[in-house]
Length: 351
Image (tube, rainbow, N blue to C red; front, side, top):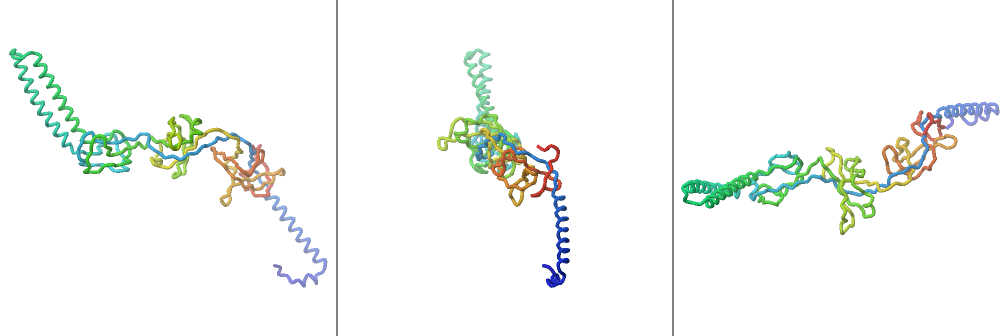
């Protein structure tokens, strides 16, 4: 608001008013010239073109281990000691479970007693054979019995050694089914181990796309909890659909990573074709208040900010779903920074 009283203009007359107007016009011209000077910007340019983009078919799946081992006892007996729990890392050959080998001990005692009896018979028949009191066929039967009983002793010793259950592989304990004091028996799993360095993503794909997915195909695997995307390879396509869902199981190998663990949720993106799409470099995008846009140049090379709707990303490029047309010229990385209304000079030859 003006601090000069309105009555002063009445008393000043027309010459004063003309002088004031001229002064205001001179100031406006200076300001406009300054703005025009500051509006010029040198920037990189990019001509929007249509390129082939892969058609992605995305499915959900779970990270699993390609090497899963169930640990069970070879002998019957109560679990005397269980030395690991879920989440523990174990080494190959490490003792995991100690079983009380009561039956194995009794079998070894009985086998040793039979062996002692067979040894005594063997010595006696050797002497009788030398004296001609028995035939060679009778002596051979005793020798055969001795060999069988001796083998039984070795077998009983082996059974007794199974009281210590050792890990056949290096891995991580992911499941414990029995506890100390439970009865262990052959065929009943006590622990489950997984190899964390050999991981797969198991997912189901629609019968519509299964014919376009092959072993060895490169796929994009996104682990949501890590906010990262990994490159995987299709390891196996099971050629039999689930009878209920009519979908096919596909196993995809993951690269070894200390961040990825079995059980994680994963999304697998299969490339099942190509399509034409408008693509621009990610570096050209300017985000404002959560919205993405670019500076579009008109025929006079004046920049105007244009909001975009973006699609899938591929490397350092991103698809434009709405907001641009093929042949549009966009500016980016301006010096000074680009603003709407600036006249832009292309840096070098542009693109």
